[in-house]
Length: 384
Image 1: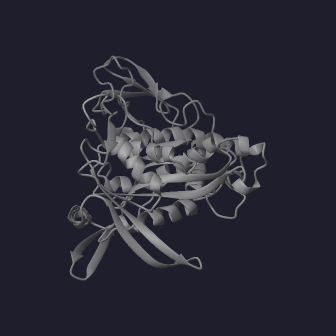
Image 2: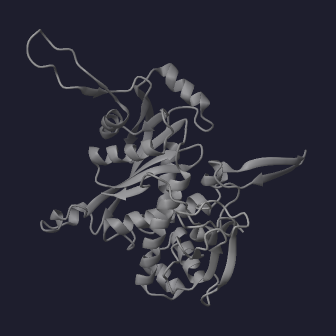
């Protein structure tokens, strides 16, 4: 099993610290009735540690199977109270699982999603609301900054189906900058993929702020101070937008426009892509639909909306972790021809498409995965 091979000594002073077990870890005993209440010891330094250490189960009295089933219910789109009724537990218990799993998924995504070189990154915003819709807020409630309309900003790699980062907040330039900063943290050094989005002006300003280069304008005349340095578009940055013309709530025309970069450079990036043949936002729109279907808080016209931004962010982390690790995606499967008339498929998850694992994980494997610590790192998702 995967979790047996991921045992490593947690003592930072040991030579086997964070190294996979190759006969250096010994089972000691059970210390409780639950299957994961197992005690191990490092043969080198003598350090003892629990199998639950550095997992969401550590310090909980909850049964392991109950925890796994709650996570699966949440990952399949059920809300807090619906999951509580299915599992016959209190809503507060489900919320505890959400908070613990959100922190755990953040660490897993930081461990796997980094130093990437995607050919294309699509960006979009998904509308929702917190506590009340914007038009229903009273003057006093409007003082609460996070209440009202909220937007889930998402950046997505259409080839591997990996969400590179998300931000929950208002539709402002600052949140666009936060999203692109998260994208920059997971990209390899010097990587500048083709960026595509709708015509929201905040993206162009954010791309200049995050990926732009600083230049010194020339001084006019020979007297006075030099102008302040300014940021301009990176010469190798390619950014294109999609304009959709609507009539009676239906799209009747789609135009594409290159904002930065040459048409030759954009076509070259598209030719290198395995999925896109022209500038589009189709894949990120499909992700928006997946998030709405797999997260009860984003379903339209339901009573499962969020009362605070932190729980919305945590629930999104659980949804994304479940979809990236524990679900196969039809668009990622690989065809295997054993005989001329016999076709079979290898099902893959987004993390498999990245080459970080060799199989679709079970919920148990995701929960018990012990993430080695890394210096630095980034936060996968944030609520503003």
